[in-house]
Image (cartoon, rainbow, N blue to C red; front, side, top):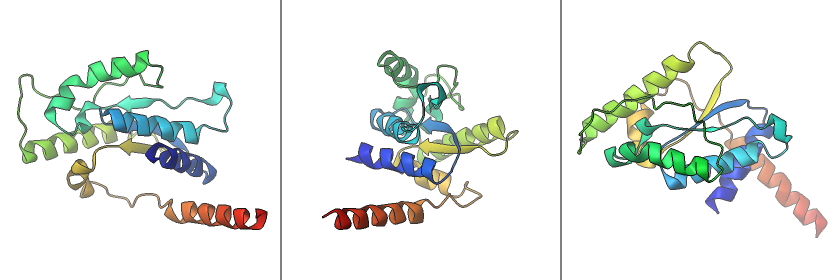
Length: 172
């Protein structure tokens, strides 16, 4: 059900004329599946040659330090399964080796450094729209870092749902 909703969000994002250039994802089975569903929805009306979005799995957005350490293996497994994974993407944060535990303060630091790195990497280009899939537990760490308001797709999505409901009523 969640995949279908995200797929719908992807198609409504495309229909709204938003040019998504990057899909960045935390190393999590569920989130990678959701990112894949978003891309499927976003690119659903495109020809195969025009389907260029790939998931950038970024260990810096890991829910925990343990997930950070397995993100390369996870990436390799999803590539083997045929997911559209960006093979060249390097994680934006390099965690010190042999770090077994992470305090909430260190986690905030990791997420902050990851966002700074992504901003620096893509700051030279305008017109980029990134979609980031990460665990809800990281939300407090990024909330204060978002300088611009997020693109409000909610009204567009609600309008599309309303139109679809009205169309179904007419068909009955």
